[in-house]
Length: 463
Image (tube, rainbow, N blue to C red; front, side, top):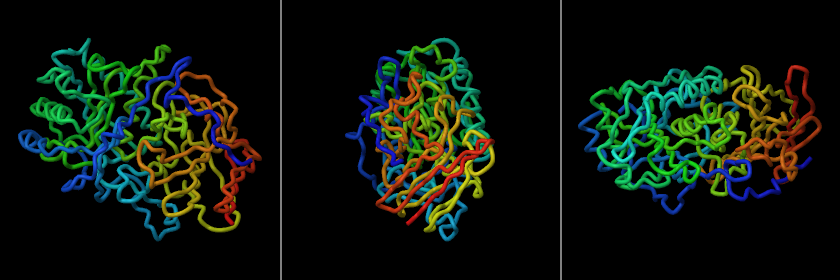
């Protein structure tokens, strides 16, 4: 059947809560800056001391964030940043879509340079920070344990072991900032205020005597939860990603850093098992992934990717993101660029091994992705398994809807009532005998069947 757009406009949000909506990470579009001249290519964080203070004066951090975005410059991608070895002349060439130069954070493949490596061993420096007017409550290590080892396990499962994420907290106490939190004037995670630049400078200066930043690939800053508003009101969490014009520590810029503020506790009693998920979302940005929710909420992708919804029940990355991050091998991805009718098989994304992604390119910027989603792995709330079909547009920026999931059962209200899960898209996958059609481009996808081991058979026809 021809998929129809969701008939229920999400009245507010990305994250749905029973009887009320969770706060949306607002994208302050009015605060977006124009491209800045003189920005050097970004590079991996391995930050240093006195030099860092001089660099802060020129600090303009490019952001892959849940709160705002800055200008992102490209550079040669670091090893392991994604499927960078795939030549455009290969059979995958038509599927390596890319965005324009004005796109700050693109869904294109390969991922531009400047971000942290997303494969192999990645060392994550984690600092717990408090302020004179918001002293840390309890042990700083207790704050650390809100996120680890859960985040580490999440990346291990999602990457099929391709990412060995190793967190470290070399400073085991609260790192006190020299100014009150209120003095920095931080609002909505917007990174361009002088106060935020000062905060980054102060964190680097305070940590540098005890930390060799050269030993780490990315930075996590866990702010004491009593600094700033509740996440139920405003989510301040933000990520600075991919820009070399950051404070410098131990010789290199602190170019990829995630900040987490108040707890994403929806009151359902699940925080101990779900509250950490804001960090994998923010770290997704340091690996080069854009936000998939929009100012209108999570109605474009729903709970099918943590870059869309990171409240409540666990969910995974889309297969497109796993390919972009280098977690899928070449033989797990099919590029359906040829005319005619071709059959493919897909195994569940939650299961290691086997074919995982079929991409049907439309043009140099866009295409349709096919994958199988079932309950398992990092996916807790899959209530209708099947073939998920979505459009990827590398020319649409972060937070503006670069990915759109097609709902095979639009207008039904979905198949889940789990808090913080976008209900309407919960039954989006296509089942046996159901089809997706794009008449304009002569593309049809038919789900022919599913085998006993959970392998789905799909047929792509191009006119």
